[in-house]
Length: 79
Image (cartoon, rainbow, N blue to C red; front, top):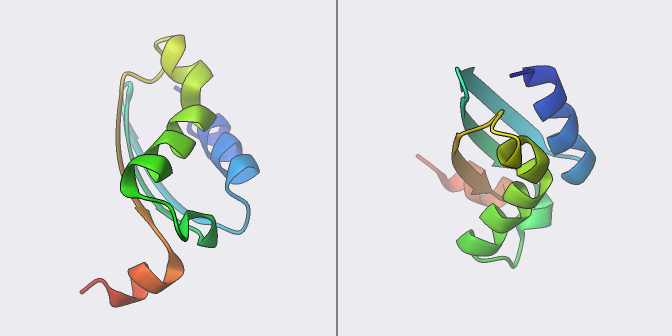
């Protein structure tokens, strides 16, 4: 799995975002912070991210994704 490609996909779809990406084998863990998540439910946020990664998931390059999707305000309020 190419972490740089995954990061590029996420940056293209979630402009002005902060991305933490950890990969192990075909599993990735993400923390994404962007204003684009404002007003979206947790499910809608995750659907947006899955849509960006769909080709990598469909090909089997990514098997499992764990993610935290936050707005900047939510990130600042997390203890």
